[in-house]
Length: 593
Image (cartoon, rainbow, N blue to C red):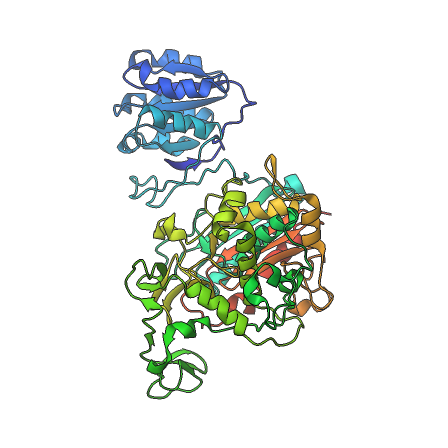
């Protein structure tokens, strides 16, 4: 199902507007009955059959109507072109092609003037009912043209229609200045010119209404695949809040643990170790004493094949591959066959790259490595290891894998159709934005495989990274937090739990309970613009992602990009040029006082 345009927002129909008529262009009246019948069950709609011999009468009948839905069931559409063009110039008209798209090529002026054009490809009964549901806000469409349509539309054209997604509204509807807000366009385009990212998607909501929703650039700097609303991004550490923290909040809500409980009570492998006294709150505040980073992948590498180590600061005969300034990699390392295979099997099922598969228990080995990692004192130190342990706790309490738990408790019931770990199991690779062109460790483009090494070697499902999503889905999660646990007509978290996790702040850092927050005392080091109030909460991700929620102003800011493309070792121009914080600043400047 491909919605090619919808300039008058007929999809979905405003059911409060009367005077809608279905005009069927078909050999007989019966062809359009399934479409008509599905519509009329919900709201009153008229129905006319266009007959070549009575076009003047048809025009007269349609003159007082407010809008017209034209169902094309016949490829002999030329005799109706003049009538349809006149109607399209006079009032909102939706053109639905229930057949070959070549029908549309025969009436190009009608297509140009029609406010809505839908390519349904078939007039089967179930297809007609589905199109009717599309108009009734009960169906989803994200089709794209595979080939151009005679100068009317390009290959790749198509809109996403999501009944769960909020519509875009005028900024003035919620007290914002559209002209000022549009300055974000030039900042986004500047980021592409400065090689901060090849493309991005920015979305802003206020009072629950989307007031800014734009895609910029392409998947790569070559520009072959434009960023679209349904493009999936590797969220990187945004996973910490949109996945792991969601699960933690739900289990806390159900009374399954307390913040001062020791994690070892739920993850027994930590007992009788130096980590036995770490609490849940310690992990959420990043005050556990765990190191900022740990090279888990080294266990999978045959270190004997790396003469002088895997990396060196200076080049030598064994380290000529320059990854960055003062970072040279081993020319020809090998993986340990005990853990890694280049072909899948029952023993090696975990795919971490196109031709790289891990033994099924490697993730268990990584947890054992965390147990052995020396602690460095309980001061604040941001560490992915904290959220990797939280994932272990979630799975022990929930009694199932974290991705399965999240999908059943949050993602599926919330209608998050484009949010998933291991996205290649659900989505075509072409829909997923690549994060890296040539990954040194995994040997090739990372498109659909998580960029974060620790998450990758956990099998793609980890507490620190691994989730892929779209701006709409991330915004929906953020809106649920802003609405104190409610999404749609259902409560997912209690008000008390939402208020606790989004407001409590560490005494030793800017961090909240799992969330990041602005640094209002040292604004130069803050992840947010100085205009952001202290109540803001959210998170960022290494691949160039962020979400920020402002309860004071009822604002949500979502930015997704693949700034790590083509290489994670390139300078971080996204941060260098303050792209995200400048966009945030414009957002606040646009608020009318």
